[in-house]
Length: 362
Image (cartoon, rainbow, N blue to C red; front, side, top):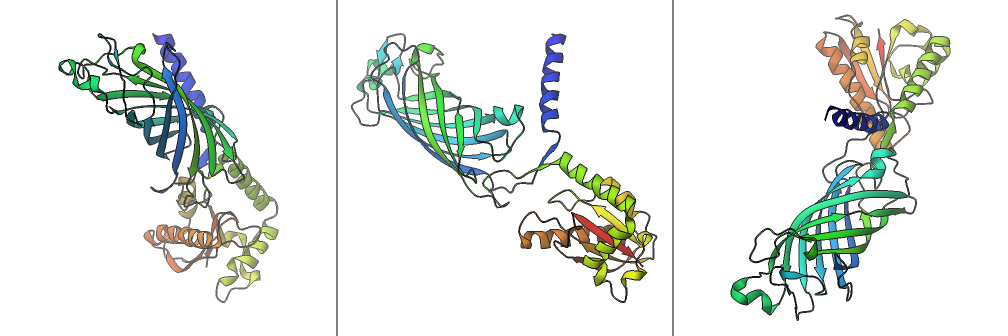
């Protein structure tokens, strides 16, 4: 047992390590929804008999909570009788005369295996997932269901399993086509609603669907992903540049950012007058390291704060983000007794502007 637990823990540690260098932009509630019409066919799980096939059509409406986990509501209608048992002990099978034979409604959880083991990429073409859920099935118009003292009934509990194999289409990957082998397991096939799990009354089949992923607040149809390793490397390069050539770097920053400081010329700004606070892409949250850097500013000092952003995203988003970065730095310093002369967001400013808040200490 200990060995099994150890292997399982190593498995999940491995998955965590695969995702450790990736960050996702925070999604809003209405982000990452999708809709998916589908068609297909099912037959008896034991293929006895296999034909005639039961035609099926359905619709999924779902949401991905992360690149790995999601949830959908699925409705399916069936057009065939083959293999639908209403009373297994009596070997009574459905013989509906209506056009629509069955209606299934289920709630399914989804897992994306590809994103678990191969690190999420919004531009990925091929994906393999897993889907499982439980639902309600209604069988239409069968005279057997109301005969024999109601040994059979027309309300069933269905367990659904699926293995969607998906291909993402076009450049934005808003559309997805998938093949999904499915198993629909009737858990309460009679008599009455008694629980009788048996493969003899299950259906197996194949569904083909076309999924549309609605546009999200980040301007794409998928999760926006940031590579933390690349961000750290970029930040380290900036630090190396600042340490190696402080005069050149400060001169460039002053030209693009600190020039807004009133009554201050380029010649008056020195390295020791400037503090650089870095942020993760798309974020305006102070890290412990950032707070430690700001703690050197003494109470009573006058400062001006200028927030900036990197070129990713729209101008409107970057302007708001840069202002939020300036405000969060100003609020932190103000609580320490520092006097804030001005806190301004300047959006994208030059090549050296990269997810920063520049603090000028007067």
